Length: 193
Image (cartoon, one colour):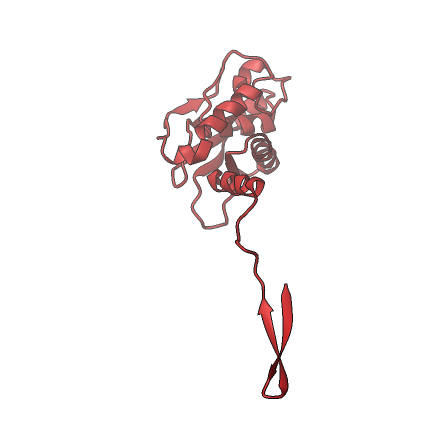
């Protein structure tokens, strides 16, 4: 807000502009909570440039994770930049590095065509393998409602959404940026039956 004050100086009037700033640049309590939460979100970049034919399944799998957990966000790496998660298409069974992967760390997802050939859903495969990178082990055998039950849920299962327990486990792994301090498991999990 700008106020103009007219001052008389030696018989002439001069206008002086005063800018009144808020007493403090303090945020309200809800704004502070939102800012704190945003600063605690772990951002992981992925590179799917070597996963031809899987683009839509990867995008859907990433969107599923981004819409179901708050403490970690997956973003596509700009071409030529480093990514924590390397996603590649292979002819074998899907497999991935067990995380939780840290910022600056390295994990891989192999999206295997063999599972697709047997009738498994590409989006479920992509979301499941990314789940490994986020720290979730397999829960085999398991129902279709559990994303991490993988191929044990059968080829008719199209669910690509983590259940509440899977979401909570990922949230806990990345709470307050914790994944930046927790080492990655590093094992490669192969999702063949």
